[in-house]
Length: 81
Image 1: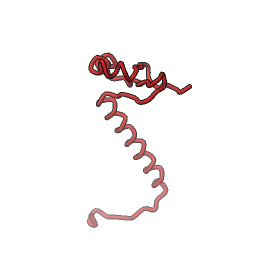
Image 2: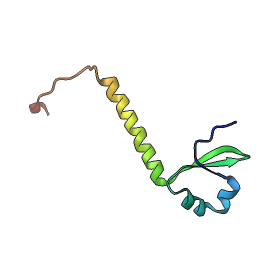
Image 3: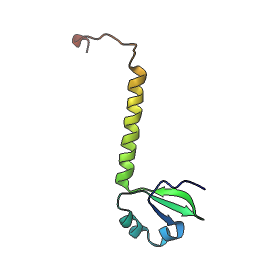
Image 4: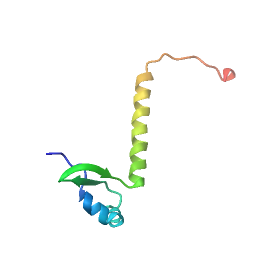
């Protein structure tokens, strides 16, 4: 059985019939779109997607900081800038 990572599910057929209503009902939560009772896709609001992308960017930045924490460092004075 496939794991569904959403509190709301709809079938592909339901989504075709009532896209706007489903978006409204989901508010800002992800919706699992099922095809033959298996998750086929996830529908996210634009705001949710943007937050997710910002979070992933923050994780990438944190990983880069950890990788570079031990140097090497370049000494630069204010006059050099």
